[in-house]
Amino acid sequence: MASTSFWLAAGQERIACDVMGTSPVRTLVLHGAGQSSRERQRPLRNRLLELGCASAALDFSGHGLSTAHRAGSLAKRLEQAQALLDHATVGPRTVVGVSMGGEIALRLACRPQNRITHVVTLVGAIYDAAAFALPFGPAFSAALRRHQSWRDAAVLPLLATYTGRLTLVRGEHDAIIPSEIVELVRDHARASRHCRIVDLPGVDHRISERCATDQALLDSLAQLIAYPPADSLPPIRT
Image (cartoon, rainbow, N blue to C red; front, side, top):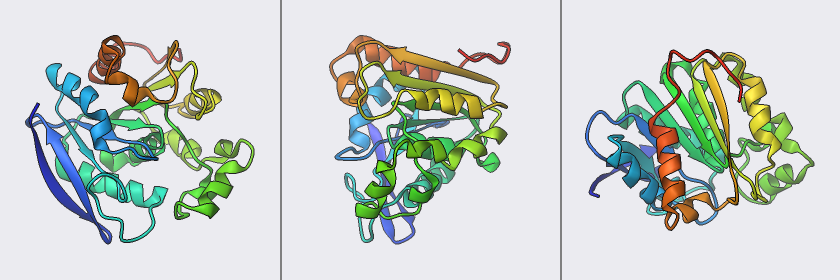
């Protein structure tokens, strides 16, 4: 399906972005780390568009077509995601974060001015507060190697102010993201309107790659994103 591509300036970087579908664009999709880029979520975004859900996405600096004049960091990713959110979306808003993108999605939601109504994390990560501003490299990796460093994530206390919905998706065989993270996020999001944990049997951390060949998984994830829990539901923790 066709998309409209454009560039955004964020700090010293030139960020490659696109929108799939037409206005209103209410969903922002954030890719993960490693060799990832926005292309990895294209099958999911195509399926979302079939459900009537237009989306925006970007290549974080150092990924895809975006520049990398300076080392990346979680702080830079948040700045870049905020730039796209400000440019391309209207409320009500859903933000989807895959792997490392999970931390960024949650931080966006904790900014009341962003008016995020639904956060979806797909095998989502959170990070030690000490790692947030560190450039990706040896010091960042060392901060992550501290045992259960994610329990000291700065985003956790911020979640106390988030009143929207949360959908936290984890894979049964994810060897990268500790399974306890979703409960930790749920327990800190005490003001959220609705929080659901979705376990995917037989799925590992490579959820985006699997979506390219697993139609049932693709359909399930798209529906979780496109159809958040209804306002009429009472607050629950599942």
